[in-house]
Length: 393
Image (cartoon, rainbow, N blue to C red; front, side):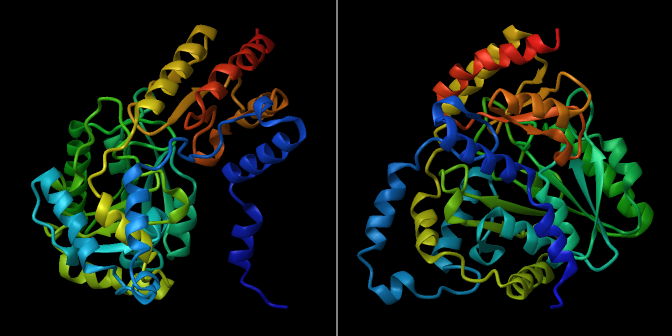
């Protein structure tokens, strides 16, 4: 029976993050959840705010045809207006509801943006280490994924390396800040340097290069300022999800923004709508459109993540592990104790420690530890981390 071989290949390859999570679930069933230290998934461990429950309760009073009925393809105008007004209050902008397209989370937002921008043969640059699904979404849009390593010491964007990677086929660059998997936040100065490089390369090549800002972790920071990228570079698209900020990963709700300052605004708004139609990403979940309308300014509770971050960094620091201090998100980027991150992971796995090896993020020699887990999991894992360290001494 004929099938699409490319789709088969993506299904057969599978996500290493989810493979590890599935192994962790099976292992917990064997030996007990308290004995397995699963740091694989970026699944928020704090509950959704009470305001979410209250919003759902109010929506349940609506007539069924209103509650469960289709919304416009781009989303309820009232929900899009609520998001636009929130952004305007926060960033001094002048966005309107027609600048926004509500989506099934940031995955749909990014896929839509890629399909709205690229043609077959184009290139999209990602800053490694990067979320591995970027490659899938870029390639299925018809473009080539081009990896550019971040600065090895700071994990900020290496603007010179980006400049060297730009070709006449470069259509976009994906920026993820706060970053998954490192937890770094790109500074305003770093992003200004990148923006200047893009303007210079555009002028030299006679092309247009977009920045796609993937920002699902914007609200989860530890004192770092997350610059608003459209204020630094006009040709920007912004993708957002409420998975992390409101602890709603399974509800799949987010948006894509075409800022009114983007020189290609009018055509891009239609291209975004067309890409959503082409991909079947129309009418995001109606109930949760109403939730974000009610909860758009609800603050994220980062206290538990901050506490976990302190426990993890202090505990591993005492044991002599090397790591990058996270400025945002809820991941710790730890150097493996041998060059081969996959081999290091196998040693972790033997002790029921389940981080994610860095190879799938496009960077060798590290592991990602997700600390969006219970505080007890972090504390109780320390003897296993100590045993692991001793094996290399």
